[in-house]
Length: 273
Length: 275
Image (cartoon, rainbow over all chains, first blue to last red; front, side, top):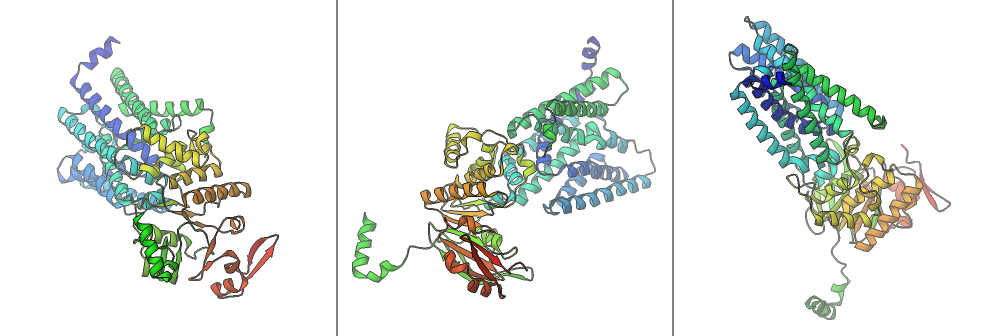
């Protein structure tokens, strides 16, 4: 234990904890709606698309984060025109995602230098995050959460009973588009922590577990946020304690084990449709 | 008081003016709907009085749901005029209660019964929404009216089809509408549960003097309750008492082909309309 306390004195670890705890809140809330709207595949696609953006930015000689945000937000706008028909939409998302993955490889091939910053995007660089990046994360997360709070009821209504929401005057397309943009922002923030490959863990893991425990939307979201916090804090401390193993491995492992345990404890009934 | 005085004056001076019925709840005049290059309805005109209970019948693709969308303001007619409660249709009209055909069951499964009903009250408002006693009381009232209070805290996936339809009815009723549009509320119910839901709709609509337009494929369980039938087929429509509309002559004219209405054990079956 004294070892951990000693580690907590380091600035890099404090930065890592501050950024992760902030992003985990957004990711858990976004995840709740992603699952409800049947959009988890989009949650998987965004970070891969962001990878292409980051690679393009490195090629263009600017910070990867610009490419990350512009590509994911661009994809959000494209996705919102794909319609709400599940299979059609997922095909569109899949085609866009694979094209972007190819584009990312293309950018990397053109780039002659050592693309360590792109690898950071793929696997996460949470222990190398600066105080400035923490500040950006805090502001972006606060804006995202405020927007989600504003959209909350119409988003939930149009998720559950889309036709009634339309009839009641909910601007469903606008709400859906805004939600996808917020998802893009959250994914771009979360990529710093877990990397593109494991963003899904923070996004969907906590909400998936929480949904099998509680019913009331706010209770599910609160539990998801709590689980997300536990995963990232425990993951960062575990990685720091071992010294060599990556944070994202621990976050993904904790999320997976908790999900399985909760499902098992719930007696299997939750597997039912 | 003043109004009744005026009424009396009018009735004395112009007796024929009083014969004019009150303004209709729904009025369509010369409505044509085309989606793409397909004509769904051609030159449809009818009106429904306040408080009428009407079954909306017709084969798949005849435009039943399309008609509901016209009334909800989700779709504009290609030609003609639609008026609902004396005004042009618009979305967000609290005077209309709507029970849609399609739900996102995956997302509903983790909601409680009363959360679903609450959507009808304030689901369209921005923000998270603070809990309040008044809101809970309004929810309890409407849940009592549809006899769903006992399972109001159960999660949605634990409920039967009949219980779910009662909740959606409550969701539609919670804004105190004057017009209720129900899109196939009986579709997934067995006969006993159908009867139960029909009895509930009949009771509530009579008590509140609501106009009800109910989309269904089988008119038989509704025959004791409904005032009229609106039958859509082949771009044509017919409105009237069930005895006058669900007949061999009228339906043959609607379909433009030989259709026979067979009556057996007080039930009506439409034969020959399958194609």
